[in-house]
Each structure stands twice: as C-alpha cells, then as structure tokens.
Length: 372
Image (tube, rainbow, N blue to C red; front, side, top):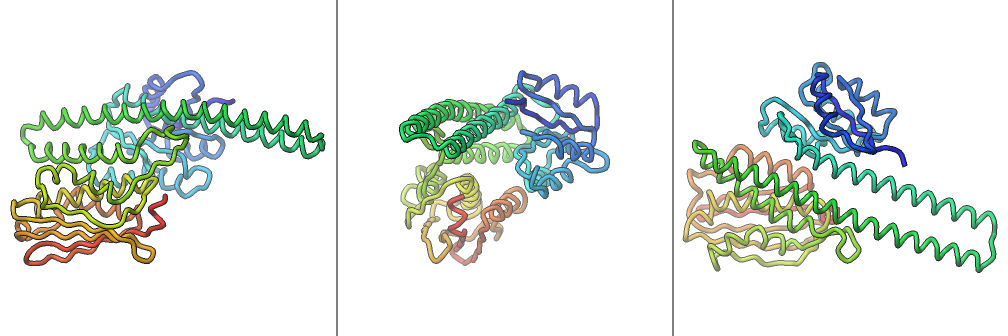
C-alpha cells in the first residue's frame, strides 16, 4: 500500500516549511506548491487525501484554486482546509465554504488542532485504500474461479474464505470508525473550549459572546444528533426524524417557556448531511424568535407543525405575541447569510408573513434531499 499524499499550497517558502514540520509522519507524502497553477499541475499527477491551501496568493488565489478543483472530476472530492493570515470575516468564510472547503484555519496555526484534523483525513484515506485493495483481491479471486471452472467443493471453500475476508474487513472498519468518531468529538471539544474562552474574555462585546455561546450549544445538539457512534449496530448510516430534531433544538426554550411551545406533525426520517444543515437552520429561527419574536416576551406562543405533501417537507412555524422589536424580522448579518447558505445546500425555501400579532413562516425542503 502506497503512502498517503497531502498537498500544501502557499506562496511563502517559510510557511511551507513550517507546515511540513508540523505534519510529517510515517506513511505521509507531503507535496508542496508555491502557486495555484503549480498546485493544479501536482493534482493532475497525484492522488491527494487533503489540500491545505493559503487564501492570499498572487495570481490564482486559494478561492480560485478551490473552484477549479471543484470543476474537475479528478479533484472535486478532495477535502480542502483554507489557511489565512488575513481577516476572518464572515463573508470570506462563507466564500470559502461555497468553494468547497471543509474547514477554515486562522494563522498562527495551533499545532495540535492542525495535527488532529490532518490525522482524521489521513485515516479516512488509508481506510479507502484498504477497502480498494480488498475489493481488487476479491475481484481477482472471482476471475480465477470463473476461468478455472473449479469443482463445487473448491468453489465453496473459496466462498467461505471470501466471507471470512469480508468479516475481518468489517471488524477492522468498525475499529477505525470508532477512532475517527472519537477524534472528531475531541476536535469539537477543543473548539468548544476556545470559543467559550473567547466569549468569557470579550468584555466590550458581551452580546457577541452570548451569541457565540448560543451557536456553540446548537452545534453541540446538532453534533449529538448527527454524529452518533458510527459503528453502532454494524452500520455507518445515521438517522433521526424532523420532530426529534426540532425538539432537540427547542429543548432549552421548552424548559424555560413551558406549555407556550407546541410541536406536532409527522415523524419524517432524516439521514446524512441534511441533519446538520436543518439543525442549524432551526437554531437560527429559534434564536430570532427568542430575540425578536414570540419567545422574547412572556405572552408569546410558538407552534410548529411538520408535514409532507407531494415531494416536499413542510414546516409551519407560527409565532403569536407582541410585534417584533423595532418591526424587524430576521436581523441582518451572520444569521441571514447562514440561512441563505443552508437553504441553498438543502434546495429549500422560506416564506414569511408578518402580522399584527406575530409571524407566520413556512419552510419547504424537497423530500429527496432528506435521504442524502
């Protein structure tokens, strides 16, 4: 089995040397490029497990390189982590995620966090190599049996060996998946600690700190729902329902508001990446209701009904109470940008109808997206 390759792209030689020193390990081949064009040449002749790309480069910058990679069948599935020393504003982050990034790291880089993230992609690629090798071995054995026309007892013996090989491969995969899940949870805990520390020290930005903590709690609930033990019951397919997801997101407010929140409807199953996207979107709507809508006053009420009609999931969101503060609905800034990005990813749409006594909102998502 050959080495796993990472691609490091930065126009400064000293930055490349630093990344090489941090990531060097047995079985890993580090490819380096000083420009986007040089990186494209390397990608045409090498299979890459992860690309760490500097955003600010002369000529073809990091965002441009990522867009070209996404447009090529050979490179479109390579995970990209952007690295930048510039301002980490929301617009730049979302541009990076839309270009296909899986993460966005700010310089100076925390060595332990970088190594932990890199280890996840190293192990995932190594597992794919092992599965491909086992598949090729099984295909070769099948061809030999067909060509040789072996007797029945020989065929049964070979079949038994194949079954044992599958079982051994499955056992190895379960061990690896548990390790990957553990690493991802550790990364989440590290990130949680850093954001929590930043919030505590933000003396002149208490509102921002509170918002960060709220988003972190929502991500935690989404994490528990969308990232269970991958080896549980011998399957790596995670699933839940819209009602379960909605109750998990609204749980803190239900505890505080009691019977003023009602959630009803059909138990429609979700699976795959849509879980995290829908969890974050529901958290955005809940946050707005708590800040500007029904949940911002003791007299307000919130009812949510979930249903499927035709090929669409319908979520009807009814807030009843005093008019929103300052006549505002969804505030400008991070929330509205995040909402648009999440809806685009799920192929969904939201319509709002502000009334004198509150807000009527309808969320629609294609049912076909709920299984992805």
